[in-house]
Length: 335
Image (tube, rainbow, N blue to C red; front, top):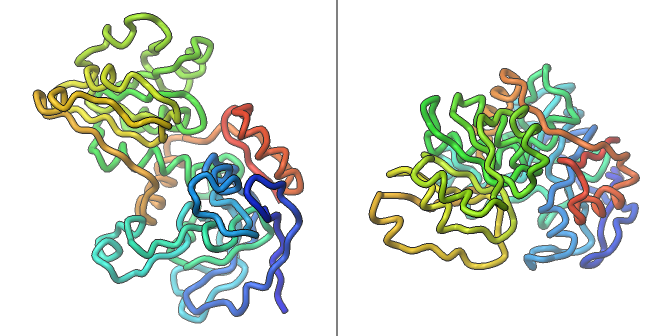
């Protein structure tokens, strides 16, 4: 019997405990990856606590995985033993629907998340469809690259797919686990970048990460001063905001894209969208194609997550700090 060893949660909100399971035979289209690092994402916390009603216990969380291919299935031609790869939110898709055929596998109705209904990356190994094991450029450090597999693609995909250009005026709302990477990618796209934050003390760091301008949203009237200024606003925060104020901050044909999920319904006047052809959009993760591209761009432009490292055996400590928003900016577990 072959065993994978990891740390699993056995009930909603419970502590992670050592756990082992037999993954069975390696499927023809799968690769087995020896995990070196796994990021701790806020989505892991939601799954541990079953906030979205998706979790089935016991399960091993983790979907920001870096490691080395140690076995390949009989049909695998695109990966090789010894290759360093990353795995993000998705581990499989049907491969034949209209979304898979056009390279948007993350929109597949049969999309298989990496740690929902299966065991994820807080472990020594994992198996996934080889199409979702993404080669990692040699210049990227594994610890700093691990959070790019979810946090990075979450901010990269909307910038890419909404057509941000060097002439674009881009704002990143919230300078945290997602936002600090979003600033770096927006700079890599050549855009004029503005950071929006409730924390004045983050201004110097935001500028060092690529922001040309900084708006302290605690200042009265700060949003009104930038009305009509932006082609694209990326909201990375999971808190309620002055959404109407941000729509007003858009230029004609501008887009407000939400990647963080606020707790309350968004209140926006329809006419403010209609009048100047503004758009409200959402984005989650990205396709394998987008992941390949994102990692190449990160390598070329020096984009990396700012991380705090924990031993894999200290996964509970990492999850506790992420829950309390005490990590600046991404926690990473290391085997």
